[in-house]
Image 1 (cartoon, rainbow, N blue to C red):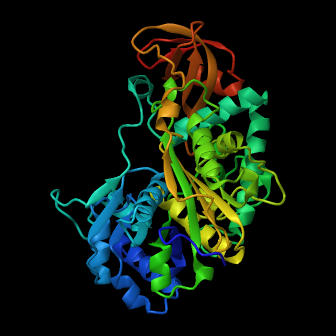
Image 2 (image 1 turned 180 degrees about the horizontal axis):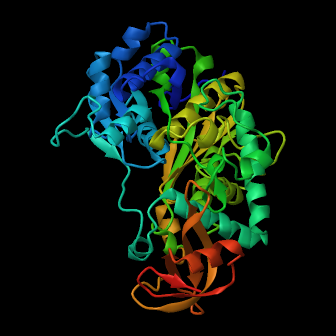
Image 3 (image 1 turned 120 degrees about the horizontal axis):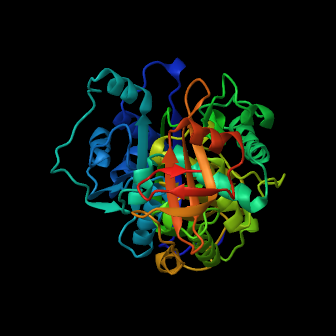
Length: 503
């Protein structure tokens, strides 16, 4: 193989753990992530031995954890591992965290400031929720407010503006359906046609999950009709998505990666065939608040990330044999595919390597670490190939993209992380009508359904003749009925400027 620049960042170890209900009570998150970290170190197959390699870890890093929200989880992991890294790191909240962290640490390696880093996370969601419901403590380790990691990666703030908050929009199950209906408006589909289209995409994900030994739901249906049709086992959650078109956060999973310089990997005796090259990463956020984005079926940030990272690596998206598009909901996958130029029904390449957040499992902010670990396995087995992973935080808000290459790939240029935020910020932004009544044409909508299958609250966004965006919701039965019984796209609605709408 061609020699690499000594400062090339390479992923040399990867591990995943899935603790299924049949395995008994799940370990605490810090123990799950510690087990994953040990497995990733062992996966390196370093000739100096796992213990010696573990002692060389300079940075211990963690993805932000949902079930164990302590300020510095990597410090607890390091203590469990018996190591004393010179730094601990934690990402900000958001599913884009793994790629943001990979970009940060790879940049430090390329600059000569770091040689060996250990990244891990673990979610024990089921015992966490049991404690929440029971009003009890999990008994897991706690940290004081004065504890902080050496540095943090990424930024975060409240995801909704005043207009959206006033309307009652407060979770992904409200926002991603907005994107789905915006996509169907652009495609000219009916509600039923769009749900069937989304289910066809999800069937590909379910099929990949069947081949993934770490998938949480490897036996999920692969029939699009079953996935897309509301039923007793697949209740409608928010229009147009039934349960099986939603991410599944209720999992107990962990993953870990070992990232080193090529120089350090060689010195540790890690076989070259185990090195996966980190060619480039990119990151940016779309306009932070959904109601201020110019188009709800587009993502300028994903497009800019793709141009920057793929261009840096010297490849096109079709050159990536292995692909994982972030898959919390079908709309996220469709928008990413549109911006990157991916054919979601290409028989030679699925849009996921894991099965996605519904079927492989959606462990809060850590899913992409599973995608990256799976790409490591794929690229070791396909050493001349490239792989691409995308990541998303909040409501299609924060984005990351990574280009990896198998052991035989040689970087076109030295690694770089591309911050393309300025390019995205230059895109037009809509004003909202919050604070004043307005009449607007409905451009997208959704409704939330209860466990009996009845819609309980409906929401819509609309555009005024002067291009401002109105946002509103209603629990009034007649409004909910009007927004769910027929297609409201293009219908004129009145928004009161304080979160309510009427038709």
